[in-house]
Structures are given as structure tokens and as C-alpha cells.
Image (cartoon, one colour):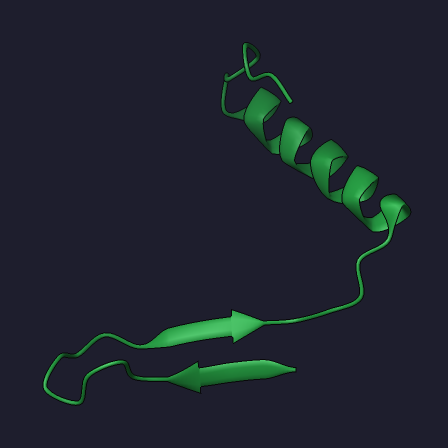
Length: 48
């Protein structure tokens, strides 16, 4: 499910929210991908 909307019509901000089934495998894959990106950016000190 994805929600898109505005909290206030007078402000030009839009929010997007999502909902999904989360598995341990998906979390591990996400963390691994994030660590790879941080390494490429030179953020090797990042701790998870």
C-alpha cells in the first residue's frame, strides 16, 4: 500500500508513505546494500 497526500493544502509539501511485509532476509539485504553504498561514499566508520 502506498499513500500520497498533502498535510496542508496551503503548503507545497507532499508526503509519501508505504507499507509492506518485512522479512529478516529483506532487512539483511537492505542493510548490506546500505553498507555497500556507505563504503563507496567513504563512510567506512558507519555502525549498524
